[in-house]
Length: 132
Image 1 (cartoon, helix red, strand yellow):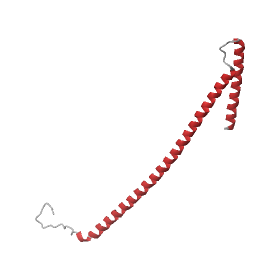
Image 2 (tube, one colour; image 1 turned 180 degrees about the vertical axis):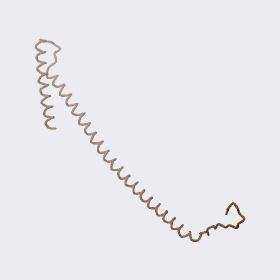
Image 3 (cartoon, one colour; image 1 turned 135 degrees about the horizontal axis):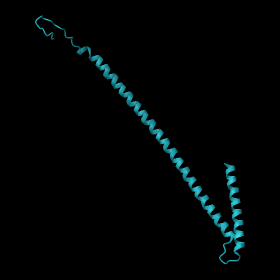
Image 4 (spheres, one colour; image 1 turned 60 degrees about the horizontal axis):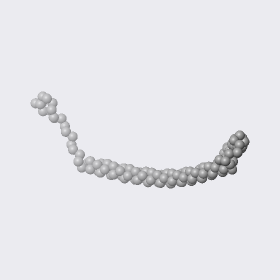
């Protein structure tokens, strides 16, 4: 990135030199005018613009850092909450399994007490529809 910044700086200097040369040529063609803008004023104007842009850039970079910090904090909170929810879900699933196991055990224990005798088919010879 240093090469790119160096190229930009060289490009900026070249452009300023070209502008200065064009200004000198324009002034030479114009002759003496009372409403003449001095090169120093133009250069100061561009310098002020550059300073303003640099200040805005620094403000944007500060806001970007602040945003990234908040995003990191939010992601951390979300991770913690997700872990807590997962833990609670697992606890509830474990408790549900315990309840299921207890219900099955209770049914198994109660089953012998409530067994019924199976119905047998009885044919007495008179029932022709073969009904029970």
